[in-house]
Length: 554
View 1: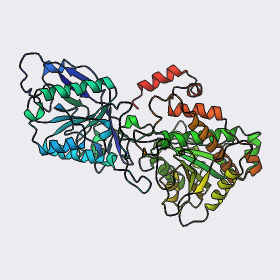
View 2 (view 1 turned 180 degrees about the vertical axis):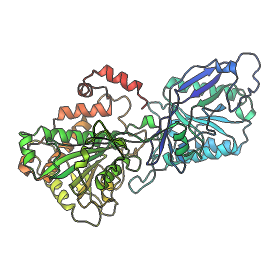
View 3 (view 1 turned 90 degrees about the vertical axis):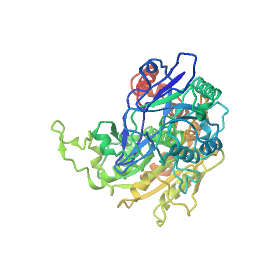
View 4 (view 1 turned 90 degrees about the horizontal axis):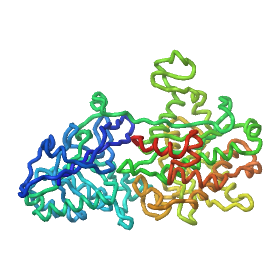
């Protein structure tokens, strides 16, 4: 049997980065006829025409590829063609097996390495790259994990003071493609094929029956974003950040209290960037807080009387050097610099850069008085939230005092949200507040987060930041406890914003988040986006939402 893997490449990018656009994916298998099992000759260009007709498909998730004007990181390929290298399949059960193969001399022009998913980390990838220098690695394929499988105990993101167990896997330059299979059955089949190769003597002996090839465009290690864009093989990093005022339309004469959240997350395999805590917890809390404020009794009259307005900002590309928040801060600080006026809508949009709404021009850095940045709000049981305050300033003490007072004087019958000031020795976490701090902004801000000195998974306590483990545990059909916890946090956030905007603390006690709605909204984000809330919002039904998601490239 001969196996062909064709991958669909999905990539998220940093500033000045591009996303590789690929053709449709296909994974296929083929059988060779005849009694003799001599070594089958293959080439970089592909297999012969007979074999090309004998394929069947498998589902898989590819790794990420990030390309800049200066180079690239992530998975690559040995050439700039659509067709990759083919190689016999060999199963290596752990990093020690990779080291043993390094010490041997495999008799193969290239190898397709099959490995368990739990083994994937930066240390393993370094050894695979070393193996590639000795015999080309056609691809590294990781098996779909079993329900009781071991897991890696590192985060693939870069090591930082908060991500102390980060190993930088996602930032490595890997000269071959890496993918993870979706189904157990496909994983079992590839294991069988690798075993059949061993029975024949294995790739080390130069005799094999089963091979794999990945076909798509990913670009060599020296690929640059300018070339990729010129060839229409790449997309610039995209997505829209979202901002808006609560209840009342923007009043340019008033200062603004802004609640912020990231809109995205990341992982080594982009399709497995679930972002339960890194993204969804902050998004849902922001939406719940805004909804609670809007449903406050006599909201219109109350908010018109406040000396400040309340706004929310959800920023795209925060996982990639805060692309969204940095652009937002730059635009409201220095202006858009519109070069092409839209003749059909001269006052509200711009053709170059292409901006369909200029409502944000009513904002300025000076008009934003407070920024409350939310980050990774789900915490292990009986653990507090932490207030991270910019160093070298006492101005944030106002927000600290407001949050502490509101958390302590909760309304009767409500559960406590514990809050503490984070360790002073820690730098400020990377959030949208960082983008404000890097500018000429002189307002008041802090980060409200579920961690003190290091990121940790809210369920296991193990590192999951920007990894495939930042998700609801497999098989879990509900996550009500997390939804209820976010309802309590969102109530505190909404009340904090209200008091910071000049509202009375007694009136703030009237602001509450509907717990049942919070659970339903949270499970939309954490478990199944094709839910009634989303369907109602888009004027559709859950089946139509699910069908639309299935057709999306993301």
